[in-house]
Image (tube, rainbow, N blue to C red; front, side, top):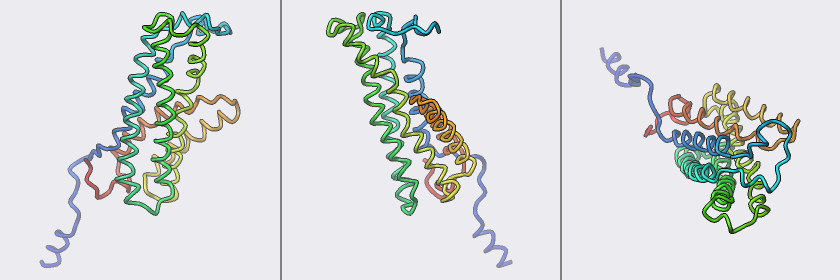
Length: 237
């Protein structure tokens, strides 16, 4: 009888169902808002999107919609803010707890690297929302001046997600080498990293890392709903 009581007392309580860890969910708006701002609100001249091999010139700046760029900078800045908060949460809840991990600091470093790069990229989108010919400050620069912002904005919102891609690759190391996250998650991030980098190395196109924004959404949900070792035993709020 005594042995039975001790066994029952020491046995861990069974979870009534799936548990939710809320802090990784900062990656959900970071990835979703950033993906929308980068991919869907990055306006292009209508003639270019027709698929006719059209060459964009400064004269095409009059064809762009400043409203789309305005929305892009709003969503983009919100995305950057969420990335910074996610990095802070990761440092507090993971990096400080597993200070022997080599890859854990890479995750927060990658998030912050992307946050810095994307701040500039979305800021240039905001500049276009002000300086295009039909925008409130459309007389500040001529079409050649706004064309400079357009060229800066051509790839920068896509390139800026490279830090998040590196963070995903670090999760692969944490899964398969350090056993700190689930191997399923590590396999997913490995596949994304390999495919994206292989495409860049073969084609030279620098903007494919923007897929890391969508990857971040999946990773955030996986961590929030899953049972990775980094989350075991902590307050899941």
